[in-house]
Image 1 (tube, rainbow, N blue to C red):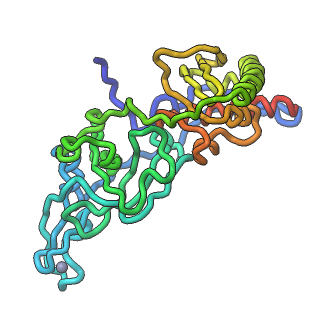
Image 2: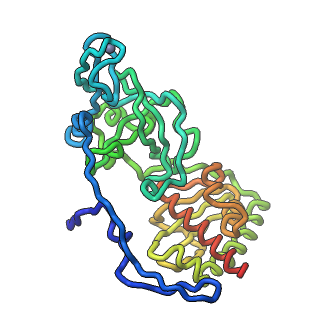
Image 3: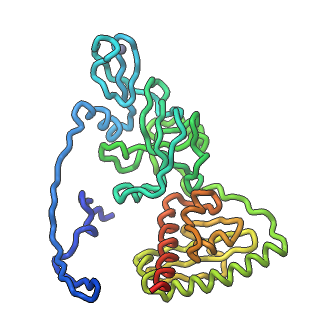
Length: 331
Ligand SMILES: [Zn+2]
């Protein structure tokens, strides 16, 4: 295995030395690449044991007031303000807790967190703690949509395989999605969870009318996708991207193959798709591809389901392609 040391700023964001010309309103302007940068080190200070506990021992630590016994997680105080600043002591708490509010879901994150989206962010009171800790939330059942994790949902703390001593070293999933052994295991790792068996929504039996709707939508999608395939802007949107997508709708199923700029619709079943898209009405996807409303919105509104949370990125790219084709037509 070759492990390359990861940089604070990934290589791909560092521009090459050079220059280029941009033409605006018929005039040429020379643009050269330059840099302005600052790096810094940040101490976790008295929080160090908490972060080290997560990083090295897969422990969740809190602080307990030596007078009133209140347990704060994370351990954000060394002295209790309620007890005339009596000292607190380090305690370990359980890795199962309850949501104390319904978490909002972030679908469109800043570039820093984009690789993690969509994710929920909410506060959990872990067993043994009296205060809530802010955590990132995921589901193993497919795309994270509203309703999966609510106030009162029991969740389990999961540790990332690669931990560096940040809050993002951990996240939570509903314990209902785990086995009894997994829930009881302290320091359960991300790689120990089954992410590969999402719960696919069932499609109702198709009647003749549904099949007719599907056939018509399929023809339109074929023509849109072949237009995307020849559109330079749209091709750029999926440069370097490679995905085999199985699409299932009430009237029928097909595959969308994305391969570094190429996009194709093929009427076949894939044995090992990268992810599955389920939409009862094929026109939901058709509308998105035709730039009549975003596919991302259909995912958020639960009209279109995808089997892998992180593939929201691919959906985002499909929306971009639809927009690129629409913009090319305007010019
Ligand atoms: Zn106290």
